[in-house]
Image (cartoon, helix red, strand yellow):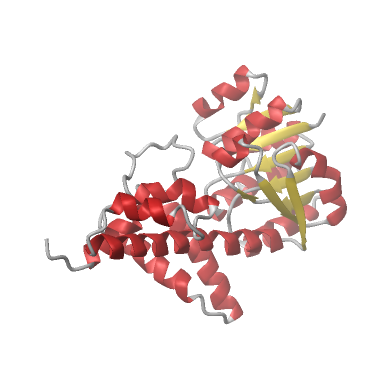
Length: 298
């Protein structure tokens, strides 16, 4: 069993950390809101005072935080992990962030003799609990082979992608599909509704057919009834977080000279959602934006 650290105990990160404890690994944890570590400490984890203290205690440190700016502070800040990285130590980042930032931080860590892998996941708390989580990894291949057994404790599908930042690029490429699908589902449901079909019936039929991807099946019902805001809801992914991922994709597209038309349109509608005061809603609230834009005889 491995001596691990975990920084970032949000909805998904917290559950992954608990899963690693349940797998028998020793864990040292840190989170900005310390109360989120209570369940981990109760299971035997050690709560560290700083990110640096986590990296000092652990051989392999995981991070899963909100965005690249937070990750950069966690690594390079005054009490960051970089100051504790030495030869043989490994940093595995699961944050959905900029591939360029990953490459920059990986170079800094390599200069200490350590290694950094980017290892974003595909799935949610639900897929994690169903043992269906997949992990994509890039960076030094020998380091990947070393940590692969630990990653398999997170999910049954672990794939090596290539050079540093490439797994993050695949993660971003994957994430643009879900809101685009939700937008199309909401558009179709509204079209049927305006023709007189009850929205609930339209969504039920649409989700029983060929378009019913796993992501649509658990988020599509939000188009019928948006649940009350609950930061602990395992499926909740708010407008701001979703747009962050789309903006990462659009920036990649700009740098590569590649148009991303459906991503652009979806991002603009998420901006409209923010303008309507819906930023803290799950991004399936796109259906409300379409309603607001559409004429009605009612």
